[in-house]
Amino acid sequence: MIKAVIVEDEINGLNNLKNLLNQHCEGVSVIGEANSVAEGVSLLNDSAVKPDVAFLDISLPDGLVFKLLNQIRPI
Image (tube, helix red, strand yellow):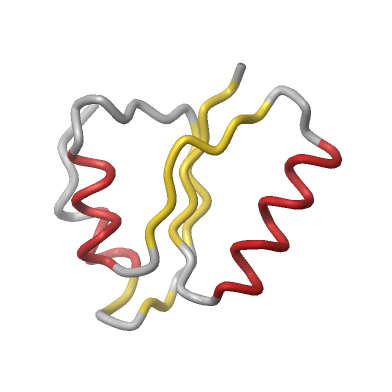
């Protein structure tokens, strides 16, 4: 099973992506969601969360996703 996280601030975009993954990617399980840079940093720095893939929105309410990427722990 591929573990995924989604960082998306628009609820429709989040729900659409989750629905598409459920319909077409049986081997993907969404293990976490965030809707801002701050929530994404918290989610991805949680040692219990170990995703294989992350779906990231570029523009979030509190900055660009690159701000998030600069703040997460190395793998």
